[in-house]
Image (cartoon, rainbow, N blue to C red; front, side, top):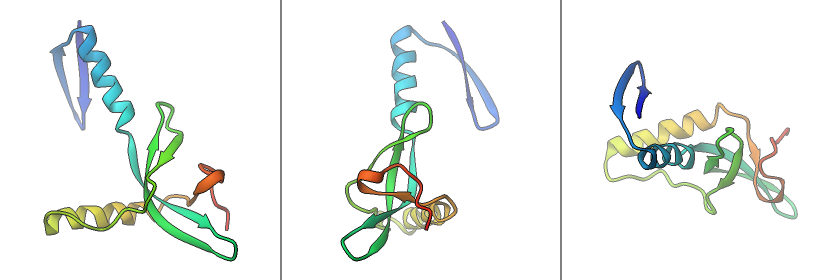
Length: 107
């Protein structure tokens, strides 16, 4: 079976067998994530943390990392990449953490 994979502005043609196609599609679905700001509530206060949020095949958030994501890396370039992803997270709606996840926080 021949499949066309579009990556950025280029299209690549390659022959895949059925198992390779399933593996490729599962990787796309399972690896769909980004950084998002989540608001968490304690008894008396709200606090905000950036997490990795993972999405299902329909683009709906289904899980997030247990702990917030640190701004760290093995090089300055990696830290810069993480900080840029954090900046993008600040542009998106804030989500509730905990039992209200993945509802948007309207505060």
